[in-house]
Amino acid sequence: MKRTLSTAGDTIRQAPGKRTRTSNDTHTNVVDGFPRWMKGTVWIHISDNPKYQYQLHKAVLERTSTWFLEELRKNIDESGKVAVEAPKEGVKFNFVLECSGNDHEPLLALETKGNAAAGIGPRRVNIVPMSPNATQDSSHGQFSSTGTIDLSSPGPEVPPAVKAEQKEEPNQPSKELDDLSLLKAALAEQKAEERSNRCVTAHNNLFRIYYNHTPDISTTNIDTALDQCEALVKVAEMYGSLYVVRPYLGNICSQYRHTLFVAIWKDPPRWLNLSIPLQSASIFSEALIHLAGCWPKWPWPTSLQTISPEVLQLVTAKAKTLCDLRSNVDREILQNTIAQNDRHVTLTESYETWFVVQLFRDWFLDRQNLYRKIGKPHYGTFYRLMRKGGDSYLPADKQLEMLMGLDRGRLGMWEEVGEDLKLLKEFAQGAVVQLCKNGLMLDVEEAGIQYLTCLDVGAEDFPWMKQGGDDES
Image (cartoon, rainbow, N blue to C red; front, side, top):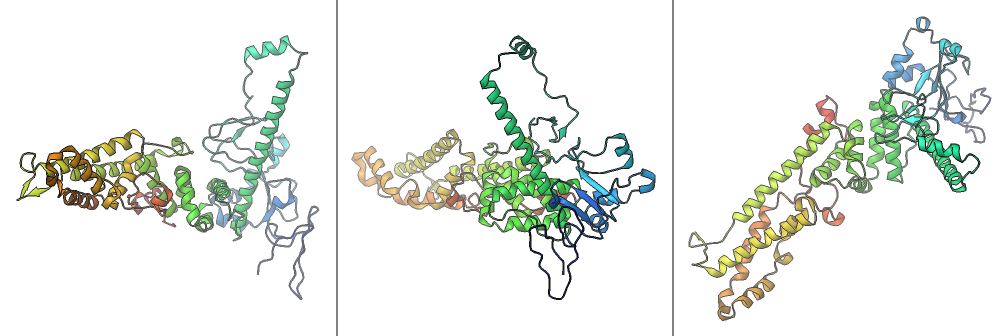
């Protein structure tokens, strides 16, 4: 049975008749278990908080991370990468968290004698990798387009006009400007702390998973869970550990059930981007149907630029499939008419029936133009209305009343209008069946989704299948 961590102030639970082995750590009294194993040879420092300082097993790290496998198997003697001032007896490797100039490189760095002697050892800076649309925001440096901090950047240049103004009025500080500067500094500090906490939490969750511990990800707030999953996935990607975290994150997301699908509907591109590294078929399919159904409109908070060209090509291809299907259905409905004596009705031979056919066609085209003007993409609500049939649209009694008012001298001639209109509606009701299929887990009527959702998403559409991956749903 695995023994668990207990820090100062916590009660150490001990099985009857068994002694608990504790470390001699100066900061805290810790049971021999995660996150500090007495026989662990790898020390990892990601925060000054002792809770986030780890003594882990080299074999576990090599088994769960391709990055650690490469780092820990390097020739120690030749490279000179020997732990500097090892914090614990028996530790052979000492990693600390540092800023990285490359968003695709891990943030942990191995301390070396050479770096320490030159004074350029890894800096203990806790910074979370930013999202792809991150903007400049730091009092200590500038974010690059990849979202990491570049400490070598001199920062934004002060415009000449501002410099001149500063020289002209050196002794006239503006209280408003001072307050604004203080506010900006406070906000920058708050954001830096949030990024640091996000980074530390992501690393901690990764190490927990290495030892088969459940990650600390919210199971009550899906927005918080999404942030935590994204951060963990980014860190897991850098350390080559995605295959380890997938089952845990997939299970956590699935526990949200209906709430998950509502969240996907609110921001499908963001969930689509998460589903790919997780290789989640259900999340990917749900998000893709939303994007293709609404295309070319993009009402989502996550930018279109975050979608990879390959996936965007898939979205447009699926949208074209919808467009082609809709065009075929429209053609069927508009070409439909009523036959009498095996001949299509005409204005001269059957005025009343011919008029009903034209009335239906006029309503169909007018309603499509209306939906186009108000910007309802792909008219999903329109086709679902036709699928209901009956008096959900063009109620027979009102149409009869209108037609009879057009020609009061021939009232008896309109008695069969109701039957003719019913025939046309029944045909349309059958024609739109395929358009009204719902590929989502959400009820489109209940959610008020206006676009078409009748897409089929198969294994051939999953990006990871094309790369030879497995579908882990």
